[in-house]
Each structure stands twice: as C-alpha cells, then as structure tokens.
Image (cartoon, rainbow, N blue to C red; front, side, top):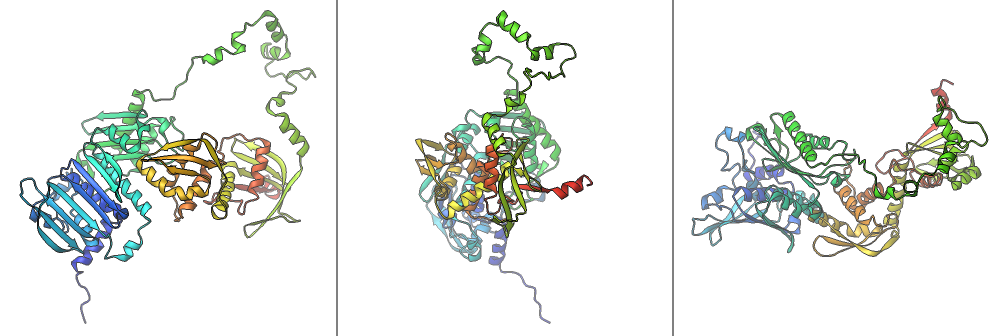
Length: 618
C-alpha cells in the first residue's frame, strides 16, 4: 500500500497562501504602502501601470534594509515585529505577520532596491515565482523601492478573474486613500499610466481630508475630540447637509488602521438621530486610539475587521463624542420664532385693520361659529353659509371639470400573458378613471371587480427603467442642452469613476466632457432632469453607482440604468393631481412588466371584490 500524503512544494504553498493576502492589485498596494509607513518614511510614491496588472511600484525614503534583511523579508512569516506570542496583543505597526512580501513574490515578478543610511551600497534583489534570480549590491538612495510586475503571471486563472482596468483602479484608489488619510503628516503621490492622480502635501488631518474629499467639505465639517483614560476619539463629522443617500465618505480608523464596523457606524448614525433623513448617511473621518491589548486585529486576512474587548464601551464613547461635537457647534434642529422680514411687508400685516373691516369680519357666520359658546362644532345649513363650499378650496377648477367629465369612464383594459401586455375583449380587470392618493405615497385605483393599490415611487421607477433600457439598446435618449454649461468638480476617486462611465452616460442623454484635473463640464442632460438639478443628479448617480448592492453581477450600463431610474422617480410623499395619477398608471400598464420593479419589488397589489367580501365574512 503506497503512501499518498506528501508535502506541497514551497512555491505552490506560497501561491495558495498568497490567495488569502493578494486577492487583486489593490491588496498588494495596501501591503506595500503599509510597509513603507512602518519603515518610517516621510515621502511615499505609488506608481501604477495598467491598473496594477503590469506594474505596482512603491518608492519610500524610509529606513531601508541591510543585505541580509532584504533577502529575509521575502521568506514566509519573516517579521521584525513579533518575537514572543505576547507581542500579538500590543501591535502598534501596520504589518506584523510577515506574509505580504512572500505572497507578492509568489504571484508576481518582483524587483527591490533598498539601502540603509549607514551603508555605502544598497542591495538589489530580483525574485520570480518565490525563487531568487539575482541578488547583488547597487547604488541607491536611502529608502526602499519595490516593483511588482505582471501580477498573477504564473496563475493565469486568477488573472482572468480580475475585473476591468477602471474597476481595479477604483479599488487601488480606495486603498491609497485609506492609508493616506490615516497619515496626513506623510507626503503621498499616486501616478497611473504616467498621469498624476494624487499629490498630497503633508499637513494636518483637516487639510488631508479636503485634499482627498474635495474643497466642498472645508466649511461643512465639525471637529470631534474627546480624551479619556480608556480611549481617545478625534476627527471630523460632516454637518447634516453633507449627508448622502448612500454610504459615501465614511472612514473609521483604530490606532491609525482603517476598519469596517457596522456596529460603530450605527453609533454615529444614532448620534445624528432626527438631524438627517432616515434613509441618509452622515459623512465622517474618525480615529480611535486605545491600548492595543484591548483589540484583536488578527481576525481577518485584510485586517479590516477587528474585535474589541468591550464593544459596548466603544459604542457609547463614539456616540457621545459625536453628539457632543454636534451640540458644541450648535448643529441641532431648532425652531426660528423670529418673524421673516418679507412677511412684515405683506399687505395683511402692514395695512391697518380698520373699524369697517373689523365689523365686517365679526358679523360673518364663520366668526360667530368660532366665538359663540358651544358653537365650535356647528356648521350652518344656510344656503348663504361661508362653509358650504369648503371643498372648493382643495379642488382646482380644472380637476373638478376632469372629475365630472370622466367620472366612472373606462380608460383601460388589460390582461397579461407571459409578462406581455395585451388589450383583449375579456380582460381580467377594467381600470376606471377614479383615483385617490393615500399618504402622498399610494394611489388607489378602482377596477371593475375591486381596486389596485399602486406605490407611486416604485411604479415610476419601473416606467423609467423600461424607458432608459429601450433607449440604451435601440436609440439615444433626447438630451436638453444647458444654456450655460455647468462645471462639476469631484473628489479624485469620483472623477476616476465618472470618466469610466462617460460612454454609458452619453447613451442615456448626458453630454459630459473632462475639463482638467478632476473637473467636468455638463453640456446636456436627459429631458427628465430638472433644469438646475444637473450637478446634483450626477453626484447622486455616482454615489448610488459606487454603493450599488446586488447578489447578481450586472453590467455597468444595467447598474447605471437602475440607479438613474431610482434617482429620477417621483418620491413617496409627493402630492399628485388627478391628471398626474392617471398618466402614471397609464404609463405603468404600458410597460412590458408592470407588476414589479427591476429589483423585484411589487409596483401594485390587486384587491378583488370576492377577496374583500371574504375579509368581511360575506
């Protein structure tokens, strides 16, 4: 009987281990930038080619390495930071497991030049597939330069699973921002395919936030700074007006390490309770400093999820610190009891209340109804009563005419087979021209055998989705030219994304042109977008696209169409006239799939007469 268990060769074991650490080019960027920070660098340059697939190079002016250290750095689990097991519980550096360089060397062609301050010559090492091809002395300045070329060259299956250059570049920018945000005292630059994307001068935290997120945050941030014996919290939160409909600019750092924590995010959201809409998310850049022994950062390969010894204390501190900052800067909901100057100038206020006017008002039946004792409930049946036609205040003459003319008029016959709409002689239901809006959100429409309950926002979302979908595949959407082109300035990460989306946006009616560094000019927008709202619609579209969530992977165009349909749909809470409700429902039942949105939410529910009877026991 032969033995079948054997040890894997080192290069294969390294490639398997590398899969945990280096998942995409951005993973390597994170590891190399963190190593440069740990080396004490004050200047760090990141150079990218072909979204990291061809080249990722990090150059720093840190401590450098000796000849022996340079070679040892590429061995698995080789680290200068852990000597005994207790060191795991007092980690203050970014890297500590000694897996980054070994993993990179297993899946890329690596060249490294490094030199310490007290050495005359530096060291040059070339490694491929975990094998050292060359090691020799070289002339180099103080610091380290690591170049990794042709990522996954020896694992083509992994390379094939990488996404488009634009998508991979977005991930690289995200990782770059997270490291650069945590260390504002260090100079960072990012160059992609010969073009400079970021050039971040050293400064304080506020300056670094503005450099990365844009000048619009300059006057819209509130400082957070609380110090206790257990932990310190500092940073900035955006004022309520910076809240977005998607999870946008939210950064949490624990001991200068970027983390993701839904629990702490909830703490910040709860501090903004009643200040922002329930479906909005605040912006923040918050740092928590505490004893490393109170946390475990080795629970996830990317170290973006950590465990706190006492989560409830951290939650309470974060919530209290943000609340205190908002209260300190008077960012709280308030009522203004001062009378507006424009109101003071109205005729009703400025003109004197004469004796004749006073007598005319007091002699009316309406005045008597509310002033005489026990008369508040009384409505005068007299033909001359001012209350007789009170409903007319709420109904325009146009709507009254439409209602009288169209009452109980048949406007549509619909039946459905295999998702397609068909007009037939024996429909499942007739839709009658009789509508009622409920809570400014739902439309009740009578049918010949019951009624349907339509959600106005979801119905309009379905209508717009099919409209944009047809336009994106068959013909270009009509666009309205702006009389004065609008300039749009974005944060670098958003500018990279918008440039990627420009061809898709042009199909649905946007005409946007790049105009220098991170700036664009909106020449035209779809006819549905209100004049003056073009800039906001693009910003919201970018936010929705960045945080689009779905279990199914969609194309860029499909995601864009879904986002813009959701954005442009009439919202719940908007009052609609009879005519608007009629048009909305007619357009809904012209759709190929009128009964649900693209994401599967129902647009209407049908209540049949026999079902209603059963509910009431008839």
